[in-house]
Length: 275
Length: 133
Length: 120
Image 1 (cartoon, chains in turn red, purple, green):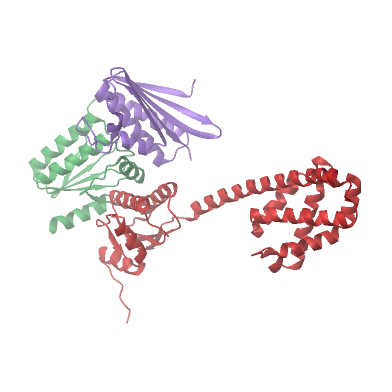
Image 2 (cartoon, rainbow over the protein chains, first blue to last red):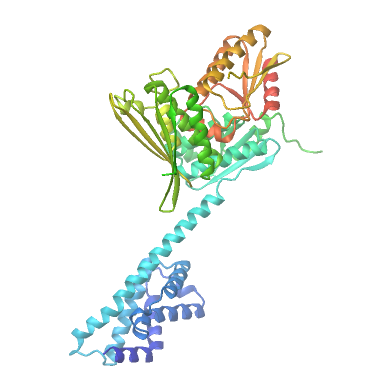
């Protein structure tokens, strides 16, 4: 049974792949099969089918981790969702099943036995692929978090005595600690007398975020500099007031430009045009 | 276990000894300057609480290494009067000694994990852990 | 055993640089010495430099806060300079804000700031 199935599947591989691609293209919101270069689609599809047939071609244990890893890493990069991967497996299974029926490998008589063989083939594969996908996804997720932490929160010395820290993205407790450390080390190192915390890139300022910002500003005051909050968008001003957060001890401005002027005047300087 | 070191707290000088031990242990464990300051300060607060409220007790410091996580645990124990109202001492601004009242909630904020066990008339054990990031 | 923190006088300003870890006795002794010196010399300003201090607990923070309040009662302004980032972070996390305290990055900035305050 198995050997016959294997022979027929291998013989008709090209037709299977073609049909499978057709089916995948019909998926709603599908981008990969429509917009990627043809040779890339072809290659990825062959890798996928090779993966799917590895355990009938090379025996049960042939589904090696390396191949699985390579494939999942690739499709994650291509932006395949886990749902899409699942659908790809479904489609592959139904294409193969239809083909086996057409070739009369599957008949009315052996249907019951064959179902067992067939699910014994596809299901373990599905499990392994989904698991590999989840593991890879977690890794990607952790990497992104680290990357975000690394790129976030550097203090930039703009002019003598004035430095700027642009904050981008959501601020959680972990990041807030990092921001505070970078901010203070930077202030002391750069001998900044005024620092501008720019929150233009912070999507939401809730009580927690405001609390972290207030703490950071307090700490800046302790090391001997002044902290100003700039880049307060109208909706942020609205939420701050609505939440009853008191920022009255702060100098705040709506734009970085006005903050900069303020910072210069605090350090007894101004920008003049050269005639 | 040689990952543990300790200082008995009897006098004000022992507070200094405890935090010096803590600072060295923190430095040797690979903590950065900010975490060193956090740990030293936490030990100072805990040791002073022992000195002020229990009269005598002990600060123990364990170096931890579990599941790839490294860290440091401070165990402050005494056989003093105990804490009658645990919830109250964890409120910001609460103090019975006329200090700044930053003690317990402050220590909790400085460390990652924090646990108080106390029985009136028997004593108090405070366990606080900082993990190496 | 008792080490005293030296207090220097420069014109109208007293300068204190704390060079080693403060124990409770030294801290209290310092508070007393500083107030006496202020009284003797009629200094109008004090700069306390903490550059070499790598931690401050609530007790020392309280002593410092008290010194500042007492000095202002005696008509003198205090600037604290050189608080290390790690110290600032632990103070904030402890919940000690040291409000109404003038601060500066270092001794030099502190003296400038103080002179400006005294002239005003």
